[in-house]
Image (cartoon, rainbow, N blue to C red; front, side):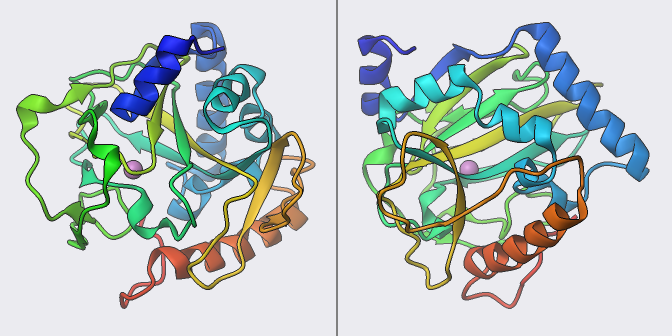
Length: 274
Ligand code: NI
């Protein structure tokens, strides 16, 4: 799926894009399914439902197994792949929500930085609506972070880098609907508010090779999406049988509680914010 130049760019810069995954029509169909769920629930997805929704909706469980995505990730991480998590990053039209500069590895509790995020655009992602921005080559070392809990910050803790980023070095990850970017778990990245008059919808999917472990103290779970898991470091996750099936909701709630304990460890918070 990726050329050797693409793979080399990922290792050198810590990111690569665009990777064509869905057609614009397929991306629009996913957006429509999401918006049908939101309409049925009477508003945007609640915070907990934006995390790991592939355990609640069969069509998202299919999406995290999309062969074009897995082919690209296999080129980076090898043939035995777990989907560790997924998150909808939705910015409403004229939304103040932003993402401060951060490194994902800071709080995820994973044993090694062999973690790739596939950020799939279900709408246009561009400068006007607050696409992701990266700083090339920053994935080589972990730096310190501080928690801000800024209410407009879309991150769990409002965490931000303790070092200052030179905005002129930022690379904008502009994507067409159906395209994805790939980024390394230690890459400096963030995004600006949505100043456009339409929603910006991204679906971020995090993949790890099966040898990775959760080392933040809690037992963790993941979805085997390709190859074989010879390690068993993560509890396997069943695919949901139907949208919001009762047994899937119960499992998802238990997993969210555990994941929130990992993500908020060392703070006085314990819940995702709406
Ligand atoms: Ni991030």
